[in-house]
View 1 (spheres, helix red, strand yellow):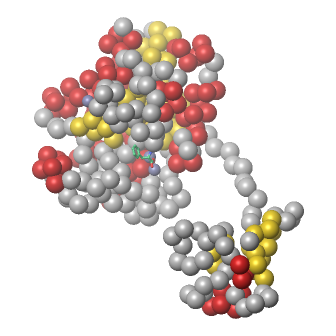
View 2 (view 1 turned 180 degrees about the horizontal axis):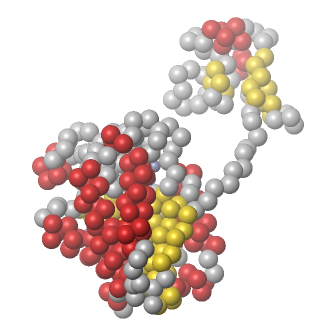
View 3 (view 1 turned 90 degrees about the vertical axis):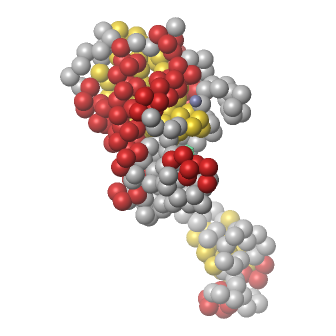
Amino acid sequence: GNTPDRSGLIVADATSVDDPIPGAPGPVTHGIPVVGASFADGELLARPGSTAYVQVLPAETRSDVNVIAELPGRNTDNVVMAGAHLDSVIEGPGINDNGSGSAALLETALKMAKLKPENTVRFGWWAAEEQGLVGSADYVTGLSAKERGRIAMYMNYDMVGSPNSIFMVYDADESTFEAPVPVPAGSAAIEDVYESFYTKLGVPYDDTEFSGRSDYEAFINAGIPSSGLFTGAEEIKSPAQQAIWGGTAGEAFDPCYHAACDTYANVDLHALEVNSDLIAFAMLTFAYSTESVNG
Ligand code: PHE
Ligand code: ZN
Ligand code: ZN
Ligand code: ZN
């Protein structure tokens, strides 16, 4: 039984820990061993009459920033957006997740800087995706209805160079996957640009679902046509997928997903190269016309 007191201490009666954390190596309270044979101190604390004090630090508030860059086109009311999350999990450096998408998008932005396209292009490097899509959600919900209405479409790039990669495109066809929110009309036209590029290169691709696990979520919730590229995370490559894309069946698309080994060596440079070209190609295509998306 745990009794929070007003100073933020939780006082645990060590002889009656009744809610151990599932999967922990022994009974623990708030991540700190209290009783259990594997913990020397815990055994001491388990003696009748002893009491454990577990200090729970107060919740912390931190500030973070999205980085937004815009290149004005001739038409400033038709904004083509692409985004990638800039943060990583605390466990590792986050080079595939998501240095890959962030770097590819940055390269496109730098190369486009000297253009004056028809449409306005806007790049977003999102903060705190790993904390629950915080940066992109804050960005979209913080826009006025008028500002949201200027955004013609959104393209998402999260994990585009996985080491055991397959090429995937977010799928607008709701009969293929059951999307948690309706995929906005026009999204299929973005998908088509990606798929025709892969086809031209002779690169096989597959559809992937809008699972709600990346920064497109706020955009599709706002009804903005969206798609994006993805080369796989913790899911295991099947023998059929190995036959199509090579790599290793039975292993994750990214065995270093959210781990310390997500370093520069964790990137498939071929996948990153193909997808970097496609990220630029799609941005350039829609910078000159979004008619296929918005009519
Ligand atoms: N958004 C996930 C992450 O950053 C990666 C992911 C994207 C997983 C899409 C599944 C589908 O950890
Ligand atoms: Zn991640
Ligand atoms: Zn990610
Ligand atoms: Zn498709």
